[in-house]
Image (cartoon, rainbow, N blue to C red; front, side, top):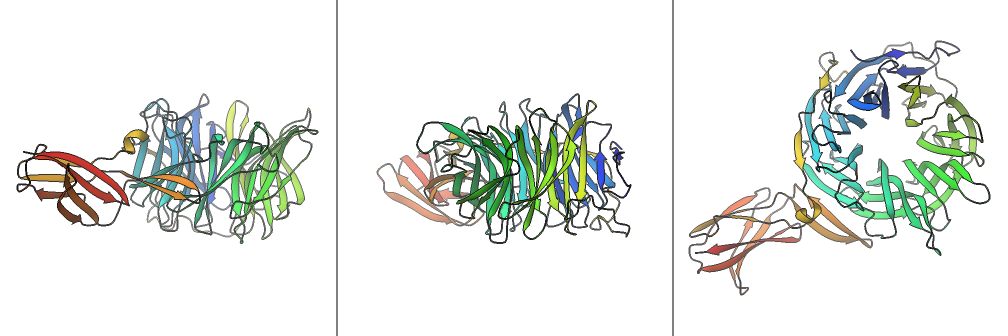
Length: 524
């Protein structure tokens, strides 16, 4: 067993909820979530000499005691997890990156069942390209949507979503922030499934001021529908000359969006402040509120609800010549700072926070102490006082019929080889034999692209699992139609008699998802 667990020694009482994980193995965590059984799920990596060694996922009980852990990948793969979520059926969906096949990293997505056993795994291969898996969510229809970084050989295509069905089949992938040429250097950090049946990407990008050519780094919010169609894109602060970053978002019961991030202050009070931004569900800027107005450095990295009308923002800050403090700000929905609590002196940041089922706040981060990365977790009540542990029993992992094994899961995954955009944009029919005498077999392409314009945005969609009846027609070079039929839904090939066609060149044309795909053959 490779995990280590202890309680922070500087606790006033042993009942206070402060935990350290991996105190002697050098580890880091990037995501935190609550399980169906009131336990907590962490995802991150185990390092060696500050280099990723394994991806790491572990589960604790309600008091933070380790129940089980699993390593992902094998020694030398340099694998790390960036996110893990519990699925609707009690399993787990993971996303991360690995060097198993590419020294520049490949994203991967893995599905585990409720016992932590692998159901499927996909490594998304784009050779010799530095790309990463960042976040993953499950949609109400059961599909999974992954946020990918730099998943293209085109350096301007930086923010991607890819959708998988519950079996791991790729349904579509799309790139964002492409229709607005003034957005540059964009990055996506977080995903949120919103209550208005949308997907929200939170990140940052550079964008010019309205009346100058000066580019400012700005929080970037992008909203899509469940098919990945871009609904709106907002470089936050365009009209307010606001500079900064967006890191993580939540929404209220009216679908308003609250984002934690950084405000880069300009004249006359230079510096960085942890900040809360509010945006309407339609992408209209509402307000921003700095946690501090006088910090030299500052960044808010987590956000979660604390009460019905109060938010907890996890942030780091430093006043001039002081230590860097990681703490929590309690803020109401109007942006008023109600309470700020210092938690720990550290040079790193909180990475995840949740409102628990019992209306408490759990927050965690990876911090570097004594030449070692550790995972720290803290649980607070509504007044930001350390919570106390539960003494009554809870039942955990009840969906698994046997004790969960602590083991290593190798990346024995399917390789999803995704061709460059120029190749994917030109799908072709496969026609054989060619030349043909009496019959031809027509195979539909494995991937098609569709193009649309939604709310002023041109959208290109790659679909790997298209549906519906497919009309097929055969024309000669003069445009005369010689044959037509319908290929039934989910059938990907058809045999056609061509023995009665005159000798010559012919074009086979199908229409998939409203887009024409064609191929040619010669009749002898």
